[in-house]
Structure formats: C-alpha cells, structure tokens
Amino acid sequence: MTRKINHICKDCGHALYWDATAVWDVETQSFEMTDTNDFHACQECESENCCKTVDVETGEEVKQGPDWTKGYLPVAEAEAAWQAFTKQRRVEYRAKVAAQEAEAHAKANAAALAAYQETDNV
Image 1 (tube, rainbow, N blue to C red):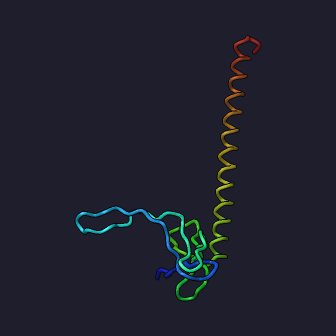
Image 2 (cartoon, rainbow, N blue to C red):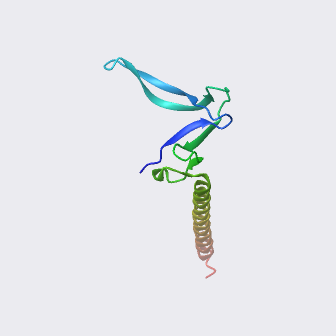
C-alpha cells in the first residue's frame, strides 16, 4: 500500500500553501492545475520554504529516495539510499573518465608510432 503523506510547516506544523500554475478549461469551466512551483509558505506562521513531509498515520518525517517509484521512505533510509546512489554514480563516472583517458593515450601512442614509422627508423 502507498504511504499517505502530508506536507506541513517544519516550524509550527500547520498546513502550507503552494504557488501553482493553472490553465482555464473551457469545457469544465474551471481552472486545472498544470504545475506546482517550488515556493511555499505556512498559512499560520507565514514561514517560507519550510516544508516537512510526514507520514499521515505515524507522523514520521519521510523523504523520497533516488528511486521515486518506491515512494516516500523514512528519512534515514532515504538518506542512505541517496548516499549509495551517489557513491555508485561516482564509481561509474570515474570508470568512464578512466576509459576516456585510456582511449586518448592509445590514440596518442598510435599516432606517435605511425609518425615514427614514417621516418624510416623502423
């Protein structure tokens, strides 16, 4: 079952309001939300960008991990998942750079060998 979440003010625990973009639908004669923006503020204390995401049933703070299909996770679990994801991405990046460097060295060596062979020094 999917976890039910709520976005509340991290300062006072009250509801937030969010900036959003809407478009007028002629057929339904109403606005339809097309996007939510990053800016949000508390309806009670007016703090800005103060969102805390919590599990509705337990009140536990939750976050999304790198695999958004798994939904919201407890904060420690989400942070561990992000750390593992970041570590894996670094390993992949370093392997890619090493392969590019090896290819560049091989091309440079091949060019140097070809130039040497053209001088009849072989």
